[in-house]
Length: 73
Image (cartoon, rainbow, N blue to C red; front, side):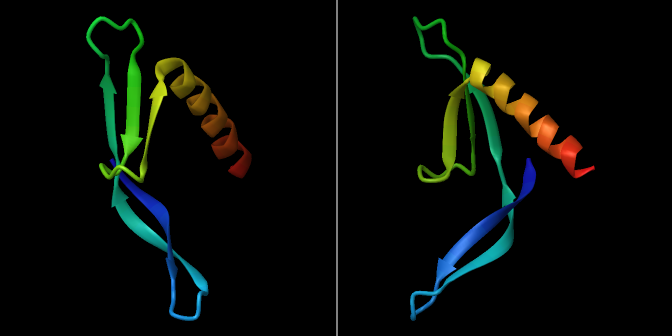
């Protein structure tokens, strides 16, 4: 899923810079064998830039994101 994310870089003087960056996010729904919980991975495929959340957490996230989007008009 194409997205724009905020990338942070630090220059040689230690100043942090923010750059909007085109990113491809991956969404994967999965379940471990012998486990009733269903999980959703949202991330860019790297270990440091992803979340594994339950479907219930995903529902709450969707609800909150919808409110934020509506508030922005």
